[in-house]
Image 1 (cartoon, rainbow, N blue to C red):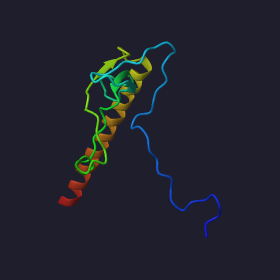
Image 2 (cartoon, rainbow, N blue to C red):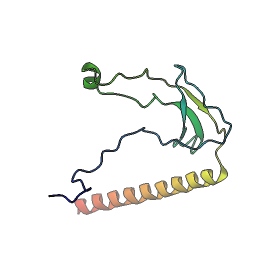
Image 3 (cartoon, rainbow, N blue to C red):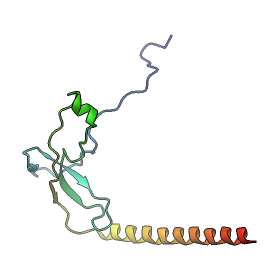
Image 4 (spheres, helix red, strand yellow):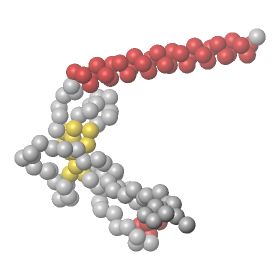
Length: 124
């Protein structure tokens, strides 16, 4: 018998796919093309690394066909609204990206060297 207040099942986490980022006070929340409030997200792309932008909350919503078919979930319209808040990458983020590129180049060099060594051993 489980102790009182303890459950054997792990808790089920629900919520948004995006963590809400704090905004300075007085900044109005933008609305998307469908009139829904937007969320702030941070880019992970190389060209716009760590820049904040407004995006529609419905962008990542993609229910399964079964959910739609049985009427369990009525999806909002998918919206690709985005508007950039930051227009330049910070210097520290640029340095970090350069460092990551160097690490990746070194890693690829090691992988290629290991591949060549293994191929040479197989030929022997």
